[in-house]
Length: 154
Image 1 (cartoon, rainbow, N blue to C red):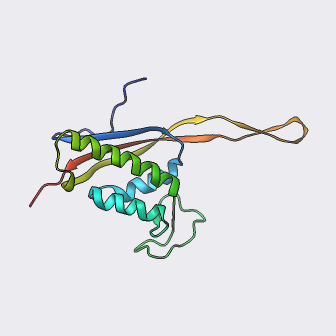
Image 2: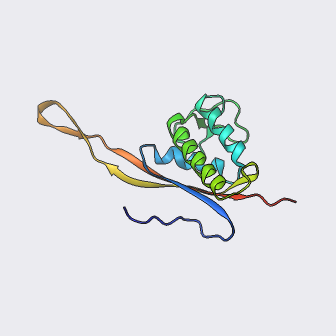
Image 3: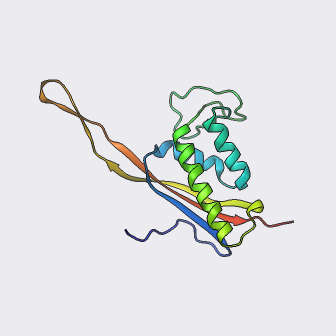
């Protein structure tokens, strides 16, 4: 497997984790990552669990054409509950937390320094149709990168 580079270039003690070729929507993961960026780890995990249980909606700011309004969103009307993408991103966050604990970092004071999602390769597929034709049925994949750092105490 090829060596992967992170989009984060910073200094200091950080814990990294990545999810490669996850079968989730790149659009959903972009919206979730934008919402989680800069959050404390405990708040981010609680947020994702609420999204999975459909208690809290993720605001869709970029990919929001024909997206319905959801209750509880402040400052932005459109949103959805991307449960599958939230579950995979939660797994990557827990992996980054385990890496931080292994490095001896304070897990109660972790903050998401960098989180991003990038399109992966497309798994090509076809559905047979009538009269010997076929329709493409492709599955997109997504790469997720998470970098955690200890928050600066005031």
